Length: 468
Ligand code: F0G
Image (spheres, rainbow, N blue to C red):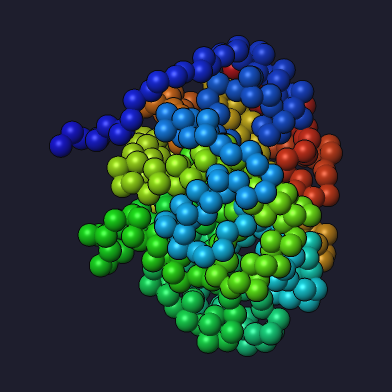
């Protein structure tokens, strides 16, 4: 066997990349209000902002797109997607949506009432925002280890059953419509939940008549970790493990822009026909008729093929290997990373990198800006800016994890790109003492502020304002 088994695909089409000078990046960063989200993508060299919708599709997916049925009602492409979800995820009722958050909206509207409480294994930005918009309070019931970047627990996505049980007792099962279980946990750095833990969550929730709803965006990646790390599952295929994960849940919200190698799309799936009918009624209002839900027929075709590709062991292995390849280089250079390495991203602990910058000056946002300035690599901020303010108190939330996320799009970049990213991240790390101050808001939107916020360096002589 070669040291690193090669990717199980070759490249048929390429997209040229543009490089710009450091002075041009300096200007682009200023124009973007030091928010990497507001950069134009053509000013970015290697874009690791997200793995969402940034996938390279296969020739099979492109071919399937040509056979998309664009009928308004009852499109053949819907039934193909429904069959793929039934086969690989095992849910009976499928409600298509334009992307994951469309499914979160419908789900939250049918299940949540004001005064409800939703426990989950750490929050995700849009997921929690929809829960809160519908009047619920979110409760993080993930194990404590998930909040410690250096802890190498193999299943940092596990739910703390004591915390979950306590919440059920405190507020009463009637006020908990469902447990929101993510696999993997994005905000913890792509950390998996174990099947053993999910089984216990399912038993505890069902004992109290509470549903379990899966965030399935990266459940295939989670299945791979179960195969690698959980006793008794090594001989099972990723496809079989994925079905086992879903079997322990009552439904799922899916962003097909992740695991399924698509550029857009999503779905909500439910086992209960009564709930499914309610969701089908609402999807018409917010997304589109219940057989397209905001997607073109061709999008549903691409997802149906993508689902089947995503569960092939060699594809998911190559995916996780690439993340590990980048991560190992950074570990070798002693960068403080979230351990163990996650499924979709390598996360750098910005609070540990820049301990001299107070949390109020957003070390992760600052580090992401510095990395872009150095090489044109765009990471994502996953710390206090993403966490927003507490809706009750209006105070900034300061999660223990203050990270920048180097998120790897699927089948898009090569090992040389990863080498370049590693070199730049290591270079910025070595020069971290030059970053003596952070950033402050000059504009702070009310909802999901990290997308549109603008910042300025807190000191005029900030390294973010200087040539290399
Ligand atoms: N759930 C998780 C775990 C996600 O990571 C995302 C999106 C969503 C739901 C929402 O899905 O984008 O299709 O509406 N995550 C992207 C990211 C945006 O960069 O992490 P969507």
